[in-house]
Image (cartoon, rainbow, N blue to C red; front, side):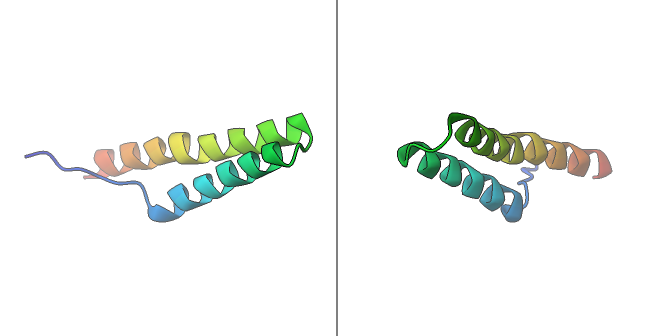
Length: 61
């Protein structure tokens, strides 16, 4: 049986918050670069930092 390590819920929630802000600004036809920045920030938060956290936890365990 393998151990399954989840990223902290706070990282996922913050990332989804920024993705939601990006989608909202796209729907309200806001500035393109502002929308892209929010979506990018959300994706980086959920994917990059989540993976980094999981890798750090695996090396410590």
